[in-house]
Length: 286
Ligand code: AMP
Image (cartoon, rainbow, N blue to C red; front, top):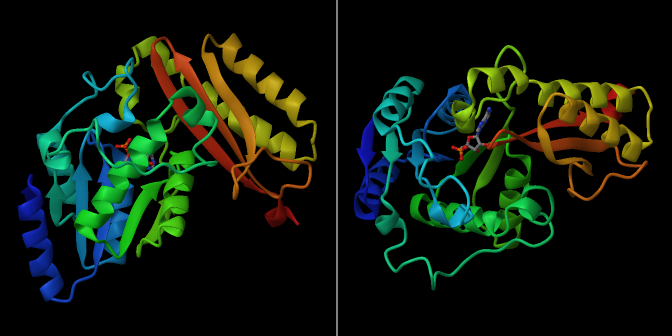
């Protein structure tokens, strides 16, 4: 695997690969890689001749009080993991390479509707930062296919909408969430948790699965159900940011008629904010 840090090197490496007729898959990440990221790289390996990963902690998507400075940067370990997973090319640019003209006057991509509420409500500007950097990565790499995790369900919805609305010629793949044996969704931010907090964290997935079971069994009093879920999470000592049931296709609030559903949660354990979600297809029950 080759690592490049500049746009010029990236373009040159891609030109060579394309000259040999290889299709290109892109896996964008912020690094500090775990098995969830590696599953995306392996999927990319199955999909294309050249697998490109990016590691870039994107300042545009962090709010003023968020963890941009403390976000773990572990490039050497990431390189080893990517190499073992079959990645061909790693793009690990500096902030100056990505935003050579600064961030203040930068053209941005904002995706209405699906960016609103949920994480977009708690993290103003976050999804504009995500859409902008992903749009730039798509323009730089021009991948045939790009692989993202369903773990960041709203993020994937935002990127799907951007690709649709801006006619970006890329095929998107959403990979299922990789979890620890206790159900906790793998996340770079799990590293912030103390041992005691780590024991509490699986409550999120437990509550999602309990709520999903009840919906499958026919419960449709969504507000009461979500209030019960919220109470269970808070009883475990976490602070719920949101717990919602949405239509999985539109991301609008689910109605009694919605058949493709997604439960989404964000909660603080101490100072660490974790997210998770669970999809439910009521049509597949019949
Ligand atoms: P991040 O480095 O957190 O920005 O994530 C980079 C990509 O990895 C995104 O597409 C995430 O959705 C995906 N990802 C993060 N955690 C997981 C996980 N546990 N399982 C699958 N994909 C994940």
